[in-house]
Image (cartoon, rainbow, N blue to C red; front, top):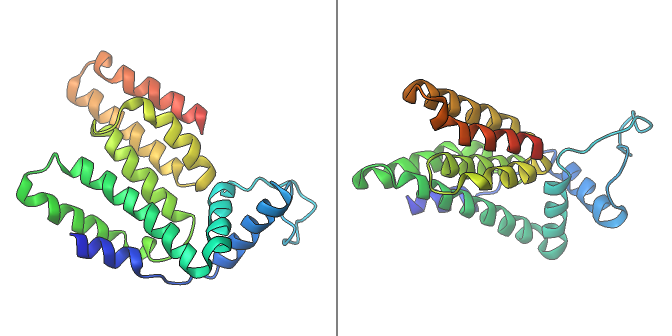
Length: 193
């Protein structure tokens, strides 16, 4: 399990849009949040950069340590995601835990090999699963979604997963009262996003 996690974390593939993310993040560090995309033919059109926080952190890591800084940031994000995965994998039988986690880590490989804003969705989904599995308190969900919405657009997938989880709980329990706390927290998380 640990070999799979380390193998995924330390392998770095370059994605063509990395340099755009670094440029946008550097601009944020230098000029603040832009109101338009200066590098597009639609530069005069108002623009909301929904990944501004991930680009800021990526530019900061690159400025602090170059490619090594990017690798360290990637390893930190993935280590947090892997720790959250291990937290909710504890519900499985002991002899299966390591295998389940290793399968998850290897399955994340195509996304986790590059330094892109998608890394934050890996962390967001891992934290969401930990929340829904009861390993983290429900009240963490709005904070996770507020950060996630500014790191990567994958928070929408997380909202869908949480909504389906609530629907599944409602079908299992056949009681609105058992799902109401999670549904209210999900509504708060959507407002936070």
